[in-house]
Length: 113
Length: 116
Image (cartoon, rainbow over all chains, first blue to last red; front, side, top):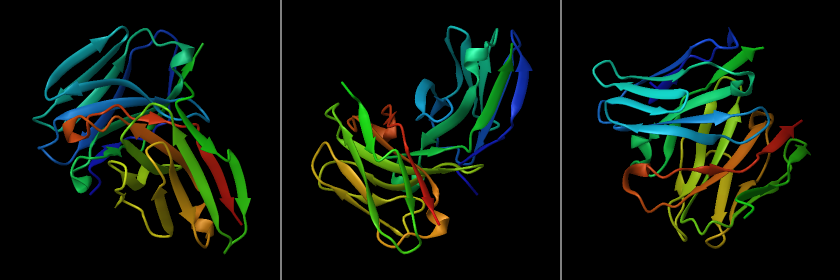
């Protein structure tokens, strides 16, 4: 079982919609979660991170962790065409002694103008 | 600052050929990583170097070797390329000073490799 699982999409929404992107993780010891955004033909870049349970908000983006169900989510409010990208969840990998990250497979998001 | 740079940007190889992918960072980071990205598979870790002088295998190390040449540079070598190694390769770096792998990783632009 992969440490982090993610629905690959693609997900297509109209401009202004609220977007929900989700991942599940396998190990209840995971405490730190990140969301990376990757534009087409570019390298990923950190969008935001969250620690343990709860929410973290940054502008139109909210990251949420539900440890009871091992579920992490990224919500995008008032989505814009510029949000069209692949979104990857990640967490420090137990297989590497948490010295490196393990990534979900990524969800491709298309926001239609 | 250029951040993380990778060369070449594109490469086409024939089966059995060898090549080295180069990566350099100018952020004085301790840790560096090599990933491959395939459709539907996300980013998979090939090798990483937690600090200068150390390298460790990741999830998919077979068919690859790495060299941490110095603090700035981390190269990935394919000794005998196979079609299964057709992929996009990303190098990344992080400070490596925070515990639990919680450093922000900074990625290069990627190398698109096709093995015929």
